[in-house]
Image (cartoon, rainbow, N blue to C red; front, side, top):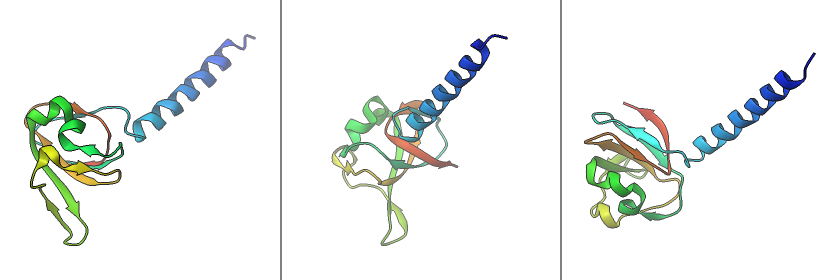
Amino acid sequence: MSALPLILAVGAGIAGIWLLSKTTAGSQGVYMLPGKFYYSTYVGKSRNLKEILGDCYQVIQTVDIYDEETDDWIPPADPANFVLQKGTVCRLQMQQPCTVYGFKVERVV
């Protein structure tokens, strides 16, 4: 009996675990569709929102930041220059489909 199927199965399992770890770390893009709110946690390096969203900045419809003190969603006063810190909880909505990076989606509504 050949050991090749076992080797391939183990290799596929390791590759799956690696891919899952990269996805949960936010390095994989999140494809966002219009008309849905994506409740997400920012997991990247601290940068301004315009840099983080890149081309998606032009098609964003809503961006709100969760404020723990007021328990409410608040839009940043100057979204282009607003700096997101790692762990910031956001609510995003797009006008057109777009892929964003650095966010871990918690739920979609």
